[in-house]
Amino acid sequence: MQSPEIKHKKGISPIWILPIVALLVGGWLLFQGIRNAGIDIVVHFKNGEGIIVGKTEVMYKGIPVGIVRDMKVSEDLKGIDLTIEMDKQTRESLVEDTKFWIVKPEVSAGKISGLGTLLKGSYIGVQRGQSKMESRKFTGMDESPGKPYYVPGLHFKLEAESLGSIQKGSNIYYKNITVGSVQDYKLLNGRGVEINAYIKPQYSKLVKSGTRLWNSSGIAVNGGLSGFKIKIESVASLVYGGISFYTPKEKMDSRQADNGAVFPLYQDYEAAEYGIKITLQLPSAKGLISGVSKVMYRGFEVGVVTDFKFNKDKKRSVTAHVLFNPEAEFALRENTKFWVVQPKLSVNRVENLDTIIKGTYLTFKPGNGDYCEHFVTVEQPLAEEMLRPGTNYSLISKNSTFLSIGAPVLYKKNAGG
Image (cartoon, rainbow, N blue to C red; front, side, top):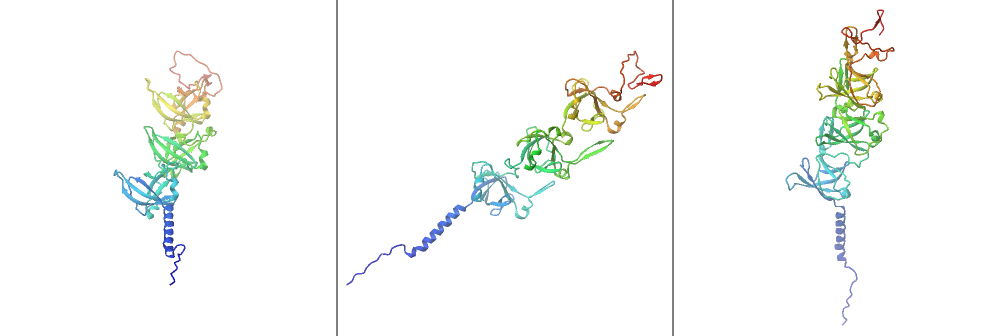
């Protein structure tokens, strides 16, 4: 009887092909899932108003880069924690100083933003950080941050006594052209307000170390009997605030401002005008008005009175602070005489009638000596005698009852002086 021959098959049985293929496909899908999986982060906000789990997105420059997966009250009950799944491409940007904030519709004077959220709902904005340390936990901001310092352009600070109508997003103007904007602001400890400002790269060279900036919001009105002067920088700055600047020609050669530079923000254009600060001591400020009264020389305006302060002397005199035109710096010598020009009526003549319309002003007679920035005013001399040719004499008399300044000197009943 012939015995059966047993043959062993080589290789894998066909029955195992399907499970192996399924295993390979599952492994591939697992690998792709791990490879393409998002990055979970937690962002803490004070409240979650407008946030919807599974719908609210994280947007970067108009492109969705993440979505809210979970929302719960924080352990300290002081806010909410959002679990956000970020796209894997954002891995390198999720560092310690990355910023998040909730974008909502905002309406303020002259500014409307976030209107797209009325239809799509609120979303979360994100700003890349520059740190090298990765992070998965963040604290959200109450509002969008300003432009970071690594953005091209000029970033500088302004210090002001008060904010006025300046607000975040207010424009910065040069010759009525928008060249930058206000990024944010904060209170200084007892010293006013600090404003962070930004100038676009193509305009950054316009700001020099000698540049003057002022609050151009609102309307400035100056005037008197001779009329009124109304100054508005632009309608836009009137509506939602603005800052303007210029560089005096004497400072055009100054170096370009650096990032982080600090400038004073003047209250208005008149205060920002470049000039030399001098002081004049007066018996009183009668007829003079701060910000209006001028210093005149031979018909030209060479200065303006900025403010007054009482002195602590026995007579309680007044010190006038004057912004003096640098072109008239030749007059700032210790022997220069300043006086107040007011209308004057006497038996012999009537003087300075133009001041009734133009207002009282200051003038001077240049002198010599060392450079000086403080002067004591004198009685008003005969301004018309200053340049008149002739000879000066001093007369001595026991009695001057019938004499007055401006009285004519007669020779054979003809006026000779």
